[in-house]
Amino acid sequence: MNELAFTVFGRPQAKGSKRALQGVGQRFPVLVDQNRRAAPWAGEVRAAAGQVMTAELLRGAVAVEFDFFFARPKGHYGSGRNADKVLASAPRHMTVMPDIDKLARCALDALTGVVFKDDAQVCDLSLRKGYGSPDRLEVRVMWT
Image 1 (cartoon, rainbow, N blue to C red):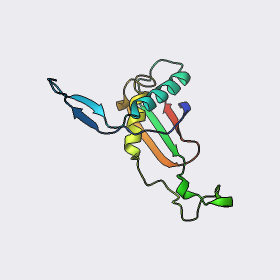
Image 2: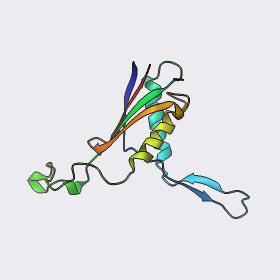
Image 3: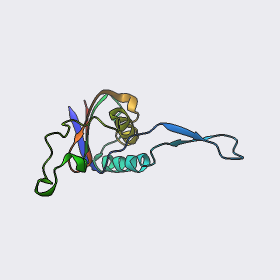
Image 4: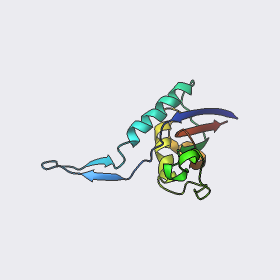
């Protein structure tokens, strides 16, 4: 089995819902992404994938693993001399926004046309979201 792995540093962004805007005098509405940070993040993912992608686009079935890591909020840490220690009451798992499926949608769309021809080729998708420092996305793509 062949494998491609890389890490994208920065805060992972979710592909938000679309919103239709229609200005005065415009005949048709324009669709915009509600998360304005999604496009720059997708560009970072594309750039990182492009650096490690040495062959032509994958055309068969692929398996993809995404590990999304987010820095813990300050409220998860103690204060004073314990400022570097995670509180016992801090949650172990990240159960807050952004939604993992929207994170994956943004990353998959970014890999389309860089790693594989179409994200419909993804037959196996593994997603994890959690706390870790620094903010990052770890990607693994496997194919035969």
